[in-house]
Image (tube, rainbow, N blue to C red; front, side, top):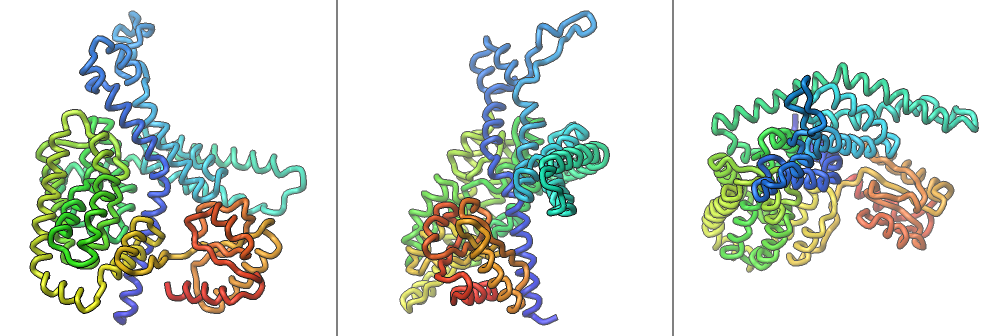
Length: 515
């Protein structure tokens, strides 16, 4: 196998992991407010929560909301101890959060119809398992939506006029019922077993004192935007399960700790050169206070040896939290120091604060040594007109696969153009009706892409009114581009004068070939 083929395979594998991680993130991130709400409710209303500690005289009220106070109406000779109120904490983590994830995952695959079917199917997994089913929701929601999409394709365009609603509603209802039963009897036991094994693996690392070694994987994965698959697929589900049992989890801090990024950027503030040094103070504010960690990734890519600094700092932060037995009650997103402190469990504030301070200090020390050792070389390169930092910013956006406001700001400071380097997979032609001219333009571009031998690009046509955040690139007539930008501001927009024959199509094909 040639070196070029090996490199291509590696890039393909990396892109595949990025896409998988982005899909998992797409299910979880829109629902982070729900996780935060659950975390705050847990912090306030559980028996060891803030309110019961501060105002124990109102314990019945806090217990009613937290789910630990006894319902007086349930006390009887047959049940002398009574039954606790259900509260908010248990039902939210058992039903609400997994169903929100399942609905979002199903909607990503097959719009609202997929979301509804995915949520119903996931209910079977939740009831069958009896434990928080976040991994099950991430699997069952998209899977059920995909099956619904395939089933609908069987009779697409074959239903008699007037029977569409009947067929659509009953087909979705029947399939959702069958999938819920399959989730209850077949899938729930498998997911339960998998969740238990993953939990045991994490417990084994903690008991063996090896959890800090996770930074060797997590920190480089962050730089390459490969961390979502780990964080959203494993750490968040297991962390929520741990938090339900123990009231906190260290897993929420493995990636969110802002200390390593802070230490790295402070090292550039004192020992960096050129644009990297000039931009570092502003990046500190964005990273540490705003929680946008990707702002420090170009600094590492510009000098890859600095990966040792963030690994060292990350491991130090994890070790500190292990020693102090500290953790968060829910995910902190974004990874701002404010979000971290709000989500910190009662009694864990000292450990969490020290983990941020120590991780920043270790990262700063290692990064300073690396920057000082190459300072003369860096100054010479800067004087010669080199701009490796601008290249690193562009490479970071390429790794991310989509536009980033924070990184674009860095590119401008670096004296480079804020080049849009995102990976394009979904191309949409949009016009008023979404049929006539846009359909013809989509057909023309589709043929050009096929002749160029490019695969994996989805080209379709829609009306401007139906544009959403899905397209990576949108082609519109020049008179309609402003409207399209209002509907999909984050997409790449291409304006044409004539849908049937435009030189811009060749530019699009060339870009797709280069990516």
